[in-house]
Image (cartoon, rainbow, N blue to C red; front, side):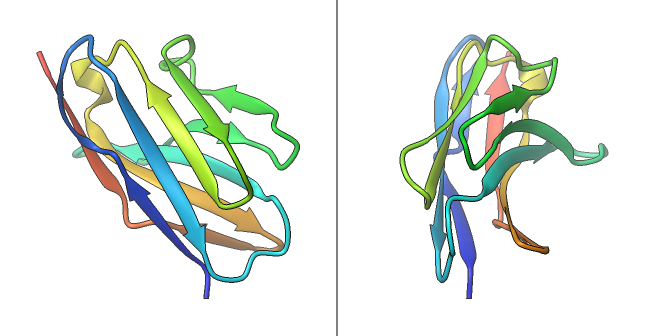
Length: 114
């Protein structure tokens, strides 16, 4: 059974940095597309950044130039978040698409104080 576990969230002051990690356990067949999403209170979940199996990346306009998604193997993906703003406060979720299935982690809270 595939499971995704996020870590690295926390409380940080505006302008600070955090690095989120997402580790995949269970059976995976290859390097898959993975992404970070976030959901703030009262708002819909939104895509923050995605990395394809081949390493191509794309970002939400709101985080371009501040966030970087990367991976070091098929099972671990990171989100480096710099110059954090209060509006980045949300629960951050990792997801992975393998074949026709999409898997989600449980989320990690990021809170940015002004």
